[in-house]
Image 1 (cartoon, rainbow over the protein chains, first blue to last red):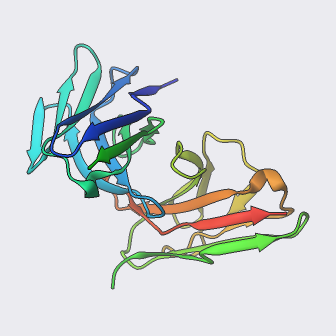
Image 2: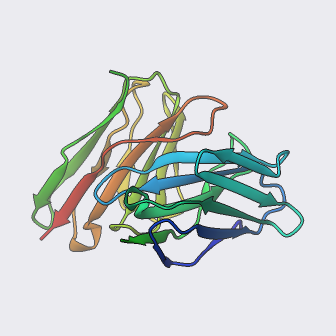
Length: 112
Length: 112
């Protein structure tokens, strides 16, 4: 079945540096790729998503890139800040009538 | 305020008890989901519903059951709780073709 692999499991970066989290999916029919952020003790929240007809999407300091040929997509956070510390989850789906397949999560630590 | 609500927030019970975790959303969403998540770890889909009187099991084998008698309400029931059920349970919802998930704050269940 569909599988989403997420790396790294933990990422520690200096405040102000950039962070990159990568996900690989197995089903070439996947066409929707969201990223969720879950702060400690809080609920997951969608921060950015991308569809397969787009190669890159940006929203202020965060961006997502998609490589359909290689079947991977990445989250980029620039100028990291303490409030970026959280667990980030990627996911993939084939459309609204299919379930999201989740990555295992990346714990991002921002060092002061 | 339109949101998705879960009660209780925390629950500590003894083995063998029957419990119901409540989830209600006031956004008029037709699709609702239950996820099981250990803190900061992977999200596992245990049940979902695409509308009233429609329920399906997710990928994670679960001894729980759900019902969807009203659009806004999606309770999850454990007939006989065990220590292995100790986890966080997250409810989520989304509307029609929109794939953005809205999560509740979760119920942290501890079975002694």
